[in-house]
Image 1 (tube, rainbow, N blue to C red):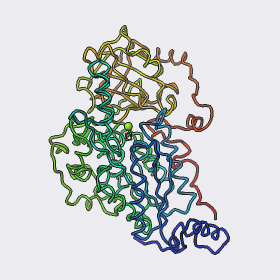
Image 2: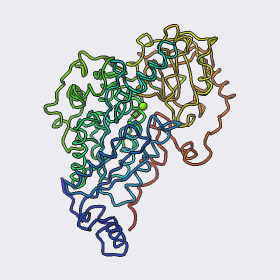
Image 3: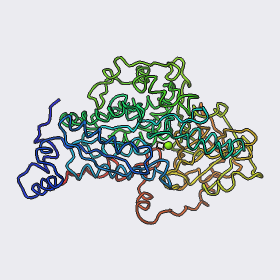
Image 4: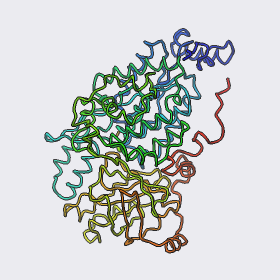
Length: 576
Ligand code: FES
Ligand code: MG
């Protein structure tokens, strides 16, 4: 590998020339209190920090960025903190997904427009991970991802509580009248006990785990709990490592090969990943120039067993337990037969090297493939006359009886309508009914909100029903569970066949054969389509306006068309 020289640094184009522009750049650094010798000829490391007072999962980033800076300085680089939109999953409305691409654009442009030689990406809360990776991939400078780390286990009256999953579970009990206000309030106070991301296998743990397996983090760093002192040391190590990555010109696309994404998919399956992984990984792969599709996920899911016994796919454990049991390196050491260990990661090592000595310390938390918690099918891709371009279900988190199911549809056109009616005592519904929500896709939501785990009607909750087949063009939280069929494409808002289903139509689900159909003839569907009226676009100005015109469907990763790598031509470096 040829090492860069100081004069080859991108930042040298700002700071080195003896001309008027560079005089200005240098004098403004002097204005900040830095001597030229502190930054000139050194790798300038942008630290893209998704901290804000509303980013609860990143509350430690205000301090942690100082550890990253310490590492950058130790290795002879010059650290610069670059704040970016924080996109907190639990706060941002209507949905954080509306802003993933916003973060991606912001990351790309703050790198491109400024004298940055390499970046440390500080993220972790759901959409921040793919947003940062997407932007850094397109910007093309060396990048390392510093994961926020999972928060501590939740606790309530001696019971372990998991982010999201237990909120959903106990909310049903509350609706059924089994939990009083006092207990509910105690849970609220006990479920999120420290900074860090959701500690179930939700989208955050899924995406930081995938990013680790793809090679964009220090190997194994995704499992370190946010509040563990190892996390501070890992942050400093990221700072040191990125400086070397700049000298070696180890850019994102050199790490993120097609095989690297396949490694990411294998790990996703073994973790019992969030369904959101599909959308984000496809978008990330495409930015890196690889045409990964839904079928790559389905193929992997037929081979790779779920071995991480983490809720909601697992029954007992959380991310803190996963770390103590050996974490990501322990998990990957059990997946050797499906992984390509010749791929390199941000440490500059092959996975063969990074996994040397990796062990599992608790066989119940990280199972052997022979003793998997789910033999195959962490995620299944279904097709048929409801979703010709595909939809997904997470069979590992659904009641086993729904492998094959037929039942009448109960259709809602909007979330508001569903919310108003779902708890009525006279609702015409049984546990065989298939609940359907539409107009909740990338354009319809807009932004594909996490509405896909439709609530079980109160009437049935009281009867003890806890799972039903549900279909939507929405997403669901990675902490959700149940027989929820998601990401139906094309979405109903653009006239996909989901728009044509009527209450009472019989729906046939067959997971082993990967099909989902309504028993409605092609002629009848054509007649319904002819009578269908396109709904109004919801946003008529600003970012939402742009979003509504450029967002891709779920199976293409919900990137903006104009951000995709094959759109138009390469962007030139800024003229100086
Ligand atoms: Fe931030 Fe779940 S709310 S990761
Ligand atoms: Mg989530």
